[in-house]
Image 1 (cartoon, one colour):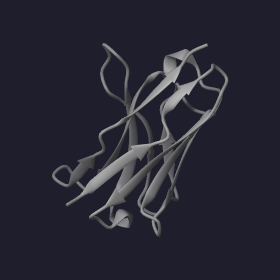
Image 2: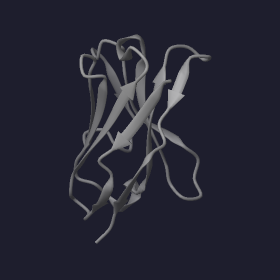
Image 3: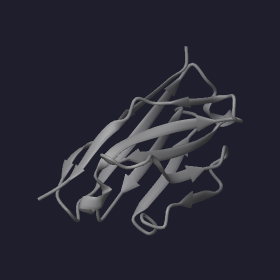
Image 4: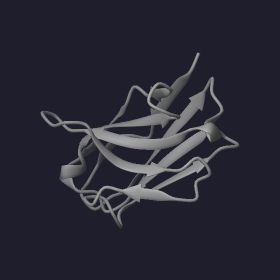
Length: 117
C-alpha cells in the first residue's frame, strides 16, 4: 500500500521558517517526480514546487521563489520543503504528490501551515 505522509506544519510568525517533510512508503521514490502543492481556504490547490526524479532540477511558483527550497533524499524516501521568510499568505494546507505519469500518482493527506502574529 502506497502512503505519503506529510509532517512539519504548524503555527509560525511572519518572517519565520518551517521545514515540511513528506515520507513515502510502498513505492520506490526515485521513480517519481515529486511536487508540493498548497490549498488555502476558499482557493484552488496550487503547485508550489516540483523536483525531478534525480533531484537535479526544480521549479517554483513565483510567489515562493527565493523563499522556498524543495529537496529529496531517494535513499530515505523523503522529500522536503524548506520555507523561509514566511508570509500570512503562505497559510494553507500543504500536500505532497508523487507523479510517474497521469495514471500513477499519489497524494498525501496534507499538513496545515499557519503564518500569523
